[in-house]
Image (cartoon, rainbow, N blue to C red; front, top):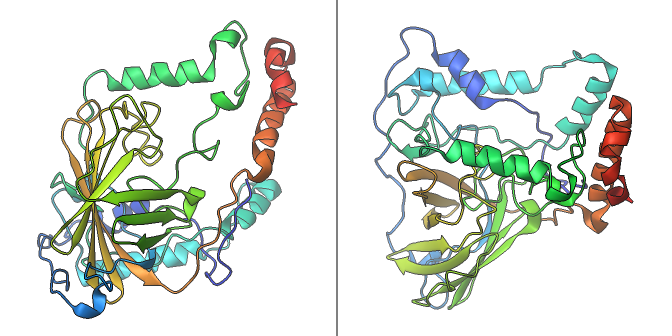
Length: 367
């Protein structure tokens, strides 16, 4: 893939925030802090400076949603909803020191690969202002609820069918006979942090919002997706029409923009590439809320209601901060060279593993 990153962004380094949080707070004596539900923002106060010329709340601009706060609360923290300031400071220091470590393990090839990849990481360098231990606020334990019975087996069967298409099921050994055998993120169709719902990830954690009286456009830097949300009481598309990003409709509840999305394709699912919980997608109803929380703050909330996948709805809250940096096109598979190389690489793997004859039926796909 080819990735275009904003030149003004500082260099970022990969680090697993959940692991660091567990290591820091698993020790005995970690304090239990209060519930983070109190809202001290300026949302809903009717500040005229934060409104469009036609009087709607002004959500326009570029918003950055990087954060060190993990999606799920580590199980070891139990009911602990927020960190103390001292715990948060120690956690942040630990992460930043780990990012800057000069690692040389894994051999020369791994060292070169790590150095290249580290250039692009842009995870952020702070927790949410309320020091929550998870971005998920409901269920109250801050964790993704159990999935419905049988959904894991259905996912496994669907993935197996995708890996071995009907025309190739008698052939064994090839990881990718054609583009349809690869994941949606590898094909640059969906994935990473673009959502919906939008969730912080490794880089390109930015959106741009544009408004008119009748529409709102949500432009993601990742995958360069643009959702055009019609405002008002327009009906959703007929049930038989399904889309990768769903069908979005918006309305105002006070100073909050509420966006409801339905009509997702069954090829996608809730939390698609984030927690590998694919589900059906077909039953997903996603509600997102955007609220100005000050001159340079935007509060983003989402609720996933997918009864065919999860045993209860999931709500998350992510703060966004205004950014002066422009968005750049995410040149994913530009000219489709990336897909050609992925399939050509699969043929090389076949030859190296001695499976060239058994997997050779798919070799023509790479040409």
